[in-house]
Length: 279
Image 1 (cartoon, rainbow, N blue to C red):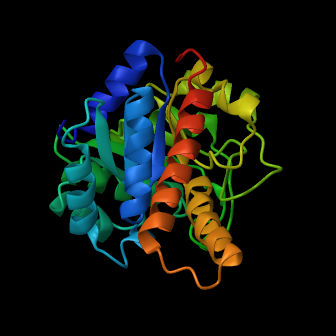
Image 2 (tube, one colour):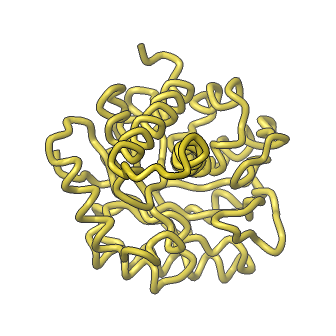
C-alpha cells in the first residue's frame, strides 16, 4: 500500500478505538524493523523522523526508503515529520512528500506558537495531517531539550486548536522525552485537556512510560504515542553485544538482520501495549 495521509491513520484509529504508535526511523534497519512489526499486528501507524535525524540522509531518502518498504504492506501507514522546529523543516518535509507534519513551536511564547503553527497549517494541504504542541515536553530528543518544561494549560487548549486548525494536539502532561524511568502521566490533567480539545491528542515520550499507563491512553482520546529511544537502544545494543562477543566480527549483514529483528520485537510489544484489545 502506498503511504496514506496522517488523516487516514487518525480516522481509522478513532473509529476503531485504537492508538497509533509513532516510531522514529533513522536508517534502513530501523525502517525494516518497524514495518515488519506493523505487518504482524495490523494497527495503523506513523513512521516518523525528526530534523535532527535527517542530517545523514535527507528527507528524500527517508521518503524513498519508507515508501518502497511499504509498497506491499496492507496496513495504513503515514510518514510523519516529528518535531519540526521551523517552517523551513516543514517545507522540506512537504517537498519530500511526507504525508503528516508536526510543527513544534511550543518553546515560543503562546501567541508566537499560535502564529508559527498556523503558518504551518497554511502550508499543509487539506490532505496532510498537522500536529501542533501546546506546553513544552521535558527530557531530551537527540540530546536536545527545552530550556523550560511547561505543562499544557487546559484553559488554552480550545482557543489554540481553533486558531491553529491542527488535526492533533501534542500535550505535556508528565510525559518526558528519552529514557525517563520516573515519568508518569498526570491523568487528571490529561482528562481536563481531553475535555477541552476537539481534536485527538498525542503523547510523546512513550519509551519511558510504564506499561499500565500506556495501556490507558486510549481512554483519553489519545490517538498517537511517540516511541524513539527504545528502538535506537535495541539497534545499538545489538551491535554492541555482537562486538563484545567477538571484537573481530565482520559479518555486518548478519548483525544488521539481528538488529532488524530486535527492533521489530520492540515495536510489536509497544503496539500491543497501546492496544490491549488487539489479539
